Image 1 (spheres, rainbow, N blue to C red):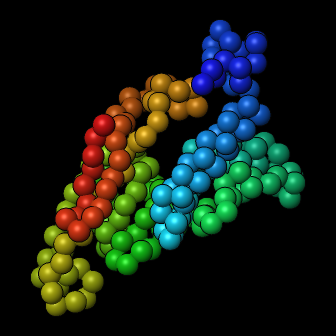
Image 2: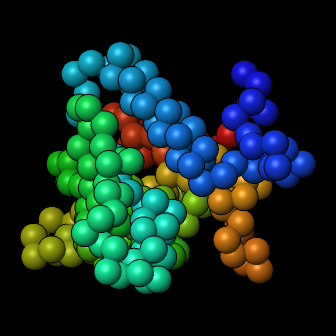
Amino acid sequence: RDWSSDVCSSDLSHLLYNPQQEIEIGRKMAEEMWATIQSMLPNARCVQILGNHDIRPIKKCLELAPELEPFIQFKQFFKFDGVELVEDIREPFKLGDVSFMHGHLTGLGAHARKYLRSVVCGHTHRGGCVTIPMGEDGGAGSNAPRTLFELNAGFLGDPQSRPLSYRPTKINEWTIGFGYIDEWGPRFIPL
């Protein structure tokens, strides 16, 4: 596809989209992604978990003009047919004994240690998996020892893209890849 047709002529030298174009292209790509997943796995439960990059624009708008809150329809960009939405980046989506969340802590294993649950998260954009033995009492009042895990799902995107350069002074150690869980357990698969 020739993406240049989607770019304003004034932005061609930088290959940047204006905000409206970026929203339209992003929304279309998300719709295509969910449609593909739902066609491949028609009985799957689909859940979208928002992260700090998703909510940052609305927070900035409300910081500058809090009186506009009743007029801003931010959530509409993240609603898709057949897809549940978790809006709070600290709110987990629980599936069995595992919590799926965007996350807010740094350090692999920090969420599992804090919440005493196995966790899949992606806040740091660094992939990895760690197991955490919980000792004799299982860490939750049980008598049996148990082991938790934390799987950081990594990052599937272009780390050089302009929207991700909001902290140019930070050294980013993002890991291109994805998390995967099956009958053999959790693991991170680098690409």
